[in-house]
Image (spheres, one colour):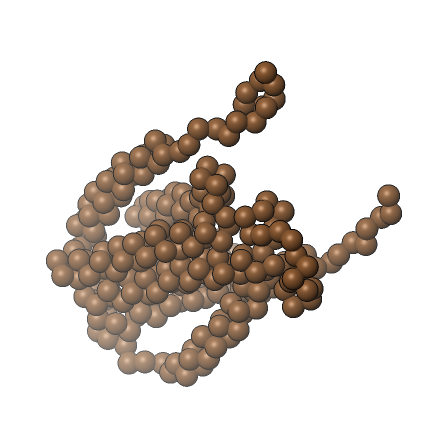
Length: 269
């Protein structure tokens, strides 16, 4: 067989995602610190919840956009679509996955423009009496210094804070489950229920992410309304997380029988 020409397109995808990650990194940690520093203490939970709720809208619209792009053929604009004989329901169909990068990139550039008009400094409120949280933020701020010794010292102080370390472990477990859910559930729906890629993405974006965003906002609102402290917020989070865990166990009872495939799931006879 003739050797097919190798493509270096994956390098551009790699570099593009690398740059995107560098650009997205400051928004969450610095954005939350910005709110925590300049907002009234009783309003911070609502503001942070609003920030995370809006962040959840991105994946929701991303899934809907992915559903739309998956209905379009991968070489749209370069080939005669009338000559394409397969449909999105065909397993050989490849959607226009690259179109989402272009649309998302343009929207990201437009969304970054307002950040240029933020003031360099704001009038700080009265000092926070919570010395634990203040010291924790101070240690985190020291992590930005490029000196290895300072970084090691700051990292050691942060990881020795039991409350922060416990919260970090909980966050890792939550994000691990959430990433697995977003990554594999569309494929699971395709395989188990015979749905197309476009419809799977549409259903995930429409039914899964909006309730999560609403829950984040309600959590911040309830914390503000009942003025929860650290202990109250911990009990509140533990109780709801436990109920969510029990409800998620129901996923193990949802499914279909295996497809009948001769030689694999059944005998040739």
